[in-house]
Image 1 (cartoon, rainbow, N blue to C red):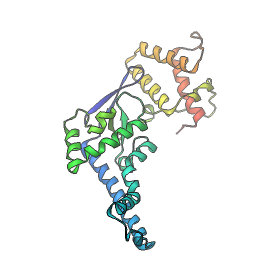
Image 2: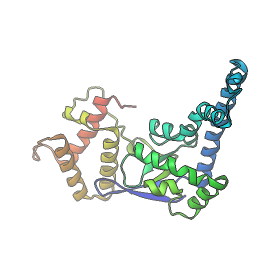
Image 3: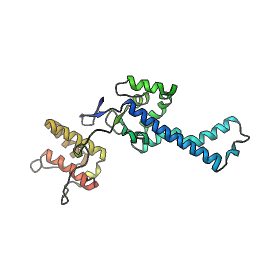
Length: 249
């Protein structure tokens, strides 16, 4: 399985597995089935249960088309709305355990999902052949919408343990030191822990020092280097975040 190295704000590369073309196609099919089911149920309710078909009588072709578009409108905005609400996933992507992410390491935003949605018109042209060809020939299995928005779809099926997440084992009697950590987000803490873990693995003291300084600067903290080393400080920051946000196992 191919990988993509995403550069974080601390200039550290983190490798993620790229979602395969097969995984993306299966996710697309699952989402398509959901949309077809919605259309079937909606038309049944409109024409049979509520018996509102008479509203179309006497209307010209364009007016009838407008009503059909209004009824099926949720289908058109399905990927845009759900990827925005589910942080880069749709039900199909969630089932297949894949997610849309920014290649530059930042969280994808509504503008990125909007670009992907607009280019979907081109990607799904000719029965999806254009998007399929783009994914096959591109380096990171990107369709045109991904290339335009600077995103990629990664697999979340990596075998991970607690050391690869923001979770941290803390004792019941643990006493936190820095309540300021609540200003950080889950994504901030994930980046901090990923970078710290990688730096420890290769004993990269420069990255550890830069990461420590970055945290102190963001949280406006002053720490006595005599009483607490940079490694001790980062460890406490990670545990304090878990303590205050209730993220335990």
